Image (cartoon, rainbow, N blue to C red; front, side, top):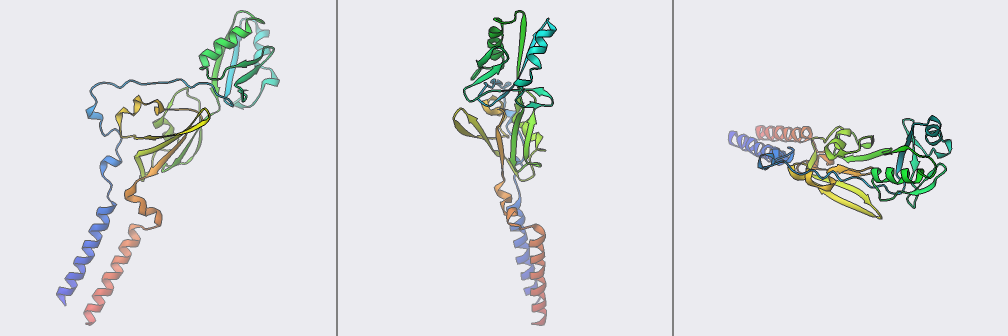
Length: 256
């Protein structure tokens, strides 16, 4: 009988070992920058500027030494098309135009904010001289989904927001998030592009998609090693089942 008891305990021990071994996650799968020691020199940062596209919202401010000029162009009620924290916004229409007071439609599609500033200023010269134009994006937002602490849509005001900062808005990855399988969904013209990012690769900073653009969607996939957790299988349930099994076997052996 003692041999049977030892055999039952041995089987239970093997089952526990298999369960815990299968559930272990290699440290490389949860670390960032696994190859940091392999870098020989600093990587080149792309920092590509976002181009203005239809349905973007722009903050456009006219700076002039004449107070009346500033008031006319900066506080025109008809030009309000939404705002962010009180900032007046100009909506870029489907053709890429902004309707500017007195000047009319100005096409700014596929221009940087600096190029748009220059183009608007040239159009303004026919009406008012000695002005300076500031153009910025407003109402920027990024969607963070999947294995992050807080899924949601997050606004941001930075001109440049990198992938790590964007994930930080959602509280960072959960313990189940796979740092090697991040999906970035981005609208590029009339196409929807999907990029796979590896946060453990130090060379990610050289990629064009290292910086987040307005309306990007980031999806963090789960680790395969813990996929079973989504089927409501927990360590407590497993251990409880094994304990019950051992108790039954021992009880049966004792009576035998």
